[in-house]
Image (cartoon, rainbow, N blue to C red; front, side, top):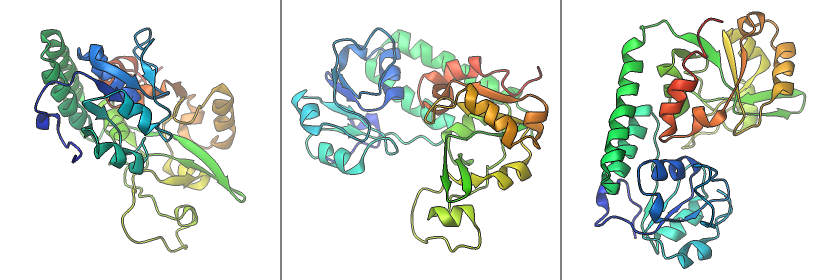
Amino acid sequence: MPMLESLTELSRIPERIVSLVPSMTESVFDLGLGGAVVGVSDYCTRPEGKLEGISRIGGPKTIDAAHVLALRPDLVIANREENEREAVLALAEKVQVWVPFPLTVQDVLRDLWALAYLGRSQQALMRMRLLETAVEMAEETLEEGSGVRYFCPIWQGQAGDTRWWMTFNQESYSSDLLRLLGGANCFAQRQRRNPLAADLDTTVTAEEGTYDRRYPRVTKSEIVAAQPDVILLPDEPFAYSQRHAEEFHSIFAETPAVKQGKVVLVDGSLITWCGTRIGLALSELADVFGAG
């Protein structure tokens, strides 16, 4: 079967859903389709208290395809970034697989509307109208060119003596969400260059061809030169903690973020989960770029 580009391609409402994506599992429940969920990935944790008794089918990169098929799903929800391509393609030969790939907040709203219409619940449609209104209000309050410069690492590592931090550029959902909150991504224009050596040193020739360039790895000198006013440290996918925040204060003492006490630990799911969590993100992170 071909992978679904849109849920509008479904001929009927799914009765048995397997979700391999934590953010979409939460969204499926929020939009009234939770009763159809028969399987979720090991990393699905929300909504709390509603996943007991539902089959676990492995981690994002270790999907047990045989287990998934044994659940007889009529829809599998996967993710291009989180799940192994080969496993998803193998499933798509046997069952309908939907692989949403949102790059903006509006993309997420489009996918959520499709889910809401699929469930045909008035409560879900009302929830979507409220969510859409919240996004529209956030857009209306933005002032052109007035964003607060921020740096948000999502992973880190070391190559020889050079430490690096992975972040995202403007072509990502996370950057678009933080734009809505009043943030200006310090690395909006920065493209990832493979291999790692080319990302860390512009004198090294980068690979040509097609690869995901949205997640560059940047060095200390780049971050200091960018002079972020705020540094956001999410607890996923890399589990940044208070210990890391203290380390950032030492490493990046020359940045306005450290000088102004703006190294902020945040719930990573609010930044990276593409789903109904948008509403909570707009509420919980409303002041992340504000004074105080």
